[in-house]
Length: 227
Image (cartoon, rainbow, N blue to C red; front, side):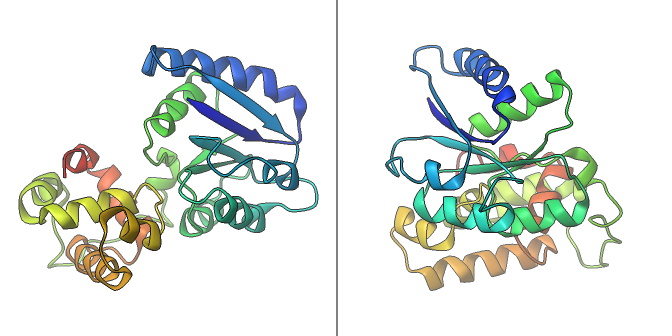
């Protein structure tokens, strides 16, 4: 398991490395662990695009930061999940980060055990969203009359979606871009967009973030594990 941390506070490097190594050893004991840390996006992008399985990216960095940093890293490390970290955890900030394609958001204010739990999720290549974001007033909304009930969501994902739709949704909510979904499944980008549009409509979701929140709130992500 190869992980790159991009964070200009070098004091956090050792602690993050130890925590990641501990979690990785538990999740994949037979897989070698490799950790690199750099201070900025420019240095990160000097690595080969295939060098890492996961990238942890701080929101506030020197020179290039925020969404610009996320876009630059995702462009260079195409296909590698990029999980963003920030001390700012407003629903608006989390939403914009997820909508920009991050494969998760971890608040830097988390206690050690919460950070470990979040890292376990992202190291399994799942998107991590803070519970406070999923349950915030800015995210939750009144359910429409014809919208799928929360308690029926997992069954709907397992039974009502086609295998291809489950594949597409599973990749989309992990942060995989449309063109990479198309490449991985060997279908046209337009076909991916049609599948997502149909699934989002069925879920009552406006976009990927809304779909994520609905799936996570209903604890239905496991229904996508075997598409």
